[in-house]
Length: 633
Image 1 (cartoon, one colour):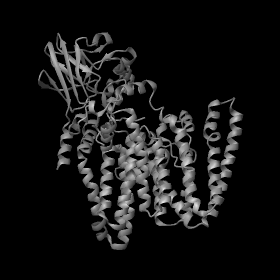
Image 2: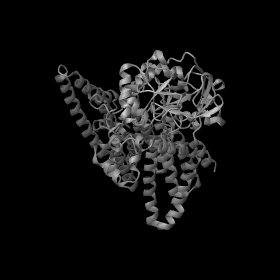
Image 3: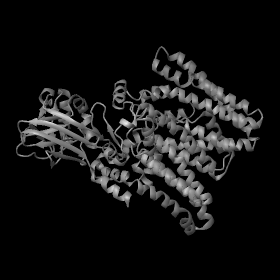
């Protein structure tokens, strides 16, 4: 399963997969699996930089790579990419502050470059936010020991340069994104802060996924919280890992442990969004904090830092074996509490099954199916800690593997349910299995693919609409929210109409689109006066039979290049359901003509002379050229 397989086409590893295995669903699944394993490698490197032993670092890496941030986001490859490269960035920065080896600067810069090219811009921003906090914590130690000026000059300045270079190199991608957001989407297109902290925030009840690896439970509770996406709920990184992370916090009072714990708790608090006043306080105090959307993604930082703490807990346990007594007592208490919850859930489920089957099912999914396994795992850890201490690392790793593999197993059906059956079939048709030899793929022609990458990569192909549309476009969202998407799905991509309706204000015109969706008619609205040859009427809505393009042929249709051939017997507007962007340049019969915004979110061209015509649309945004200049410089 893969979301937007072409949404990070600038990502080098994506190119490698396409070149070697072809462009197919199977190849993309291999890429996803590779990133899971690579997340284990990057987090292993980070754990080793903290001084953990190989076995403790491997335990930490296992907890991270099979956690809910990766399994939960199997359909969001770009989010996966962000969290794969972040540990390597942190490892490079930590290594730089420890020994000032230039190799660490290279590590940080390369990891940042790959994260920028392949990660989701929103999660990249979140990662940079925590990276900055992490660097400031390390810098504070150097300032205390060497003074402010020397610490800035010898530590922060080289690290800042190592981060600035990949930012400039990726400007061809980032610069158009910022320009599009500022000039095209505009401030009105951004999601408001109030909506942002409510949409895709981590619900309080989803915190149970820290302890229980249940997907059915989370999906069942979605009935009571429709705002939450199932992909934004999984916080699990292992019950064994959680116990050892808490053990590390309670027994090892080193600065690193306390800092990691604070960073993890910070990520979890932000993930809860507007459900706590904490995020609102940060919004008021921290500059640019309002840019962060989808708060639940912040749970990934909780998982990362607590997975590292689990490694610290294992390290402390193996060093100080007397701590095993305290841990075994805590495990018995935990098992006792889980047993009480299990008994209560069983009685409650039996009592209400006839009255409320939905609630009974939630109890069964949440507790009766998952708690027994958790109790078995904790009992296994308890008895293993009574064996030879030399065997503890191997046993803990084995239990963690069983623990996390069960979580993966219970979430497999969720991973496969994100696409509706119809959409899945259309995706398979759209992305057939083919070799790179017959796939139009040219590394030096990457600009050809910009049609799906503008606007921070947030351009997606609507399965039913058949148009590449800017994800943040307020015009598109407003128009589609009226129900107009049903009309757009039924009408052809391109059609000719003789008359238009003029409305300058989008919001006051939304009623037109709502009425059109009820009547199954296509309105044709423009926001500027048409040429004199085109009639302007009070009601320019058309039925499917009136606009069907009998005389129109699509000669070439690709992501950024469209060629049409058509005939008209009078002046007309060639309109359609293709998304508008000022980067689309139109050439009619060899002459450049303006692209018209139709229905506030789509595009068209006025055709004033009757006869046979050829129209070419090419996507050539100026912001992309400017970004190339910045990268080249």
